[in-house]
Amino acid sequence: MVTLTRDLKKLPLSLMGWFVYWITPIKKSVAQNNIERVFQHSLSSKEKKRLVIAYYSHLVTSIKEWILYALVCKKRLGKRVKVIGLEHLYNAMNQGNGVLVLTGHFGNWEFAPLFFLDKIEDNKDLYYCIRKSLRFKFLDNIFLRRYEAAGFKLINNKNAISKVGAALRKKGVVCFPFDLRPSWKENNTVLANFLGQNTRTYNSLAYLAVRYNSPVISITFYRVNNREHVIALHPEIERSQSGDKQEAIFENTQNYNKRLEEMILSHPEQWLWSYKRW
Image (cartoon, rainbow, N blue to C red):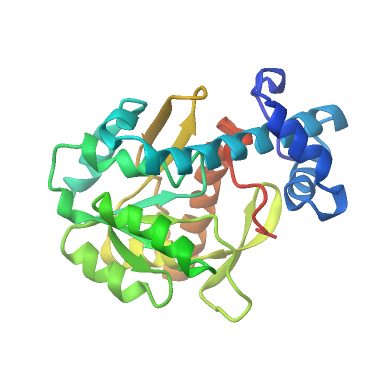
């Protein structure tokens, strides 16, 4: 059973969040269905309702920020973003085998990361990000190009393994979104626990970590009020000590899901609940 330690009464709600809640049919709301699925036995109906509205409020604010990014000077917006935990990144880089960075759709993932490279001191040419092409090309032109303009080298998620391997051999830092749902055609998956559900999960991250002996750390983004954002890096995720390669890949994948859960549950209203993960 998934439990929350955060006081849900303190989650921020907005009028637009309420509006989206009331106009969205419950049976057609992916967000409400996912929240019900995960917290059905641990939250009351009132608490789940508040979490849904807080999520919608967060999503509306994020959309406003996507528009704001096109209208306001980046330097000015950058004052709203701070980075904590950079020592975990530098410790991982010092191992000399490249770094894999577990991440996901946290906070405003299309806003806060765009300021990350402006706030680090080392070689900014070493940073890569795995991204999926969006369904609508005009959105590609907006969001993916923003990442490129921010300094990230993009790796398409299709057939990404070889390109990620090449980046790691160059001692690169590769951001790896780990909350995506694999298609049924893909066989590079394992069945692992995620938010209390048996969930098909990519094993590519664990394979790469074992293959290149690269450390895996994690990064999350969250908003602390309507204006300020935090980019938080976390320590290296514990590696499996199993001598069996397949068992090590499974155990590492489960460890990655556990870290993903911890980051989601620390700010539960700021994960992408409207994504069809299951």
